[in-house]
Image 1 (cartoon, one colour):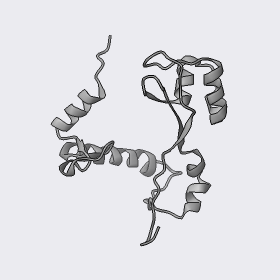
Image 2 (cartoon, one colour; image 1 turned 45 degrees about the vertical axis):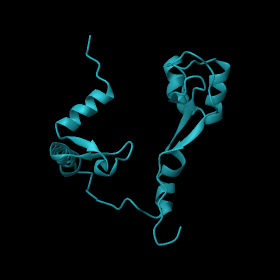
Image 3 (cartoon, helix red, strand yellow; image 1 turned 120 degrees about the vertical axis):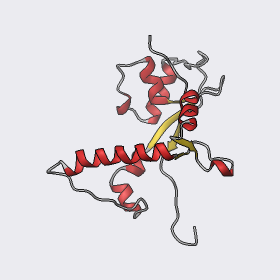
Image 4 (cartoon, helix red, strand yellow; image 1 turned 180 degrees about the vertical axis):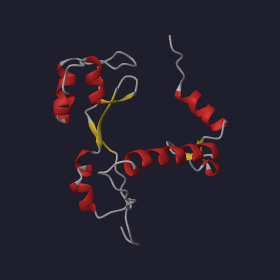
Length: 159
């Protein structure tokens, strides 16, 4: 049986060996962000270089571009980012564990096509099929909420 390492064990090892550090750590840190250390920076550079060579330089149909992250909002709408970059989040009221509703359904009903379901459909499915929390085994969930994975940003001096 394979060894199972916790995220904490792995992240501690990567920090101790200079691959990553908590983002803004000297100022108290910023949750869920990481800065690359000396070894992590080199590894990231090498992976990017190999990827670029394989998928850009060696491909007759691809060309390289290094575009800005901040773009006209119409770009993000046209590419589907605004409408689809969100996850259906649900919380267990009993143990406070947070889950992606689509993954909760797939874990207990693998043959169900959750990609074809709206948030309302998923919410109804969870209720009618009495899905249970994988952490505590209860079936007392909050309604599904949209977790937006896009950052709100402003350009200029006013919001």
